[in-house]
Length: 495
Length: 101
Image 1 (spheres, each protein chain N blue to C red):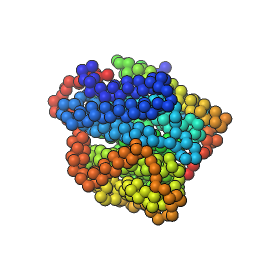
Image 2 (cartoon, chains in turn brown, blue):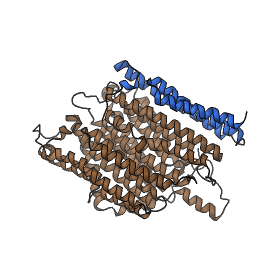
Image 3 (tube, rainbow over the protein chains, first blue to last red):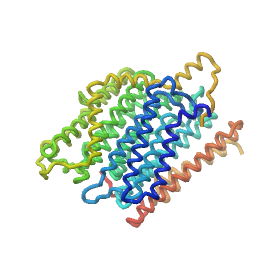
Image 4 (spheres, each protein chain N blue to C red):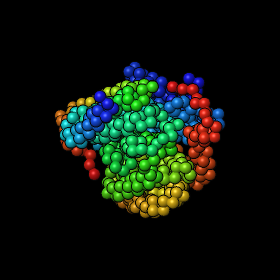
């Protein structure tokens, strides 16, 4: 119970999420948006408290038996909360496609509460060092995101996407649990810290099965089948959220788990390299044929997960920094692209034709969209370029030259489908004349995303510095202490 | 009864679960397959706890968590099935074919 205060942001947010869900019962329907504002305020408060903790990493860190609060965990918590904040902001102005108007009008408090709970799950996930906590927080994230992606109950696409998401998700978490049980059998504990003997087929098999669970959440290639359907069906702010936060959090947890879990029989870096190459290629080459922008961005997000996975080949060196840097850049460029998609979707639809001639109607918005797409493709001087540069540098550092080459080739392929949207915006005749109209919240989301993408692209030094600081994990520090002066006293059980 | 008996049962259950989840056309059937997989893990945990690591009850408590989470997950799944059933009156997975490409 000594350092339970380190988890106060999570506790605070989960209480507030439950309050929001309860408040939903009393707040009349026409004031439902009020609860969204409350949710935004809550996540901003959480962000503020974490930001303050993050600025003082030396004092704000500690370890329970199943979780650890360290600079890396704080960094990802901040990223998760930024995504939460922006997605809730976008939800305020989301209306659904013009033909259907499917945006949920009831139970908005439940919606905001679920988003907050999902974020709490991710915040726990990025700081867990015990497979039991990994499983529980992963399930918290999964279950809430199943509900969120099926939130438009009358929209059959939404339910169908959620159903597919659910079936594949439940299947992969069952596989993961079986892996955890094997790990327990081999080592006698579910904790990842302090286990020395990790040779043997049982641990190898267990790590592969645990990898399945993570791979599903992070949409790594053989387990990505749910992604396009769930993303297309879900309400677009939820798609924005799901395409960023769970993916980044799952990758962060994977990084942490596989820094500890190193089965003797399997060459994990090589496995990650193969998965990364497969994920990028599948994502990019399927995105080439999409005509629905939500679906296109879904496949692009699979490809982006592949790029992040490249960095996993050198977890000891540049890899961690590269993952952090990529995650940071990815948040803003993806939020930006989805914001414009929501603007167009509210007015017309999510098909590519809806973007025809956008430049002649609203030049600023189409310019920003083109900018976000270029950033996703990794073209300088954007945030995406810095991130990609880091990732490929990590691959080269680990002497995986073929992987860096595959990554660069994939980026070249991706330029084609990203620029196809730009082509529709700039070179196709417009179907309407009046300028695009969108709500205040959409514009503010757009402004934040644009500012950050430009800022990170032009002046990345402070972000690189903070990624460098944040790549320190407490578990490694503990390990080096343990080898220096054993036995080290294990900190008191935290929760 | 040795550990191997339990492990054989759990492995068989896991394989039956995977087979059921991959081949059933009925969503409820798929859900039942997934439940079998969860329970295979539970048997594993309890057996490992009893035979290999009898000092602490880590395995048994983990399996309690798993039972709870699996129940919560099924609740969401059945709610989704109901939501779809109200719209298109079918629970066969191949009829859910609106999203493609």
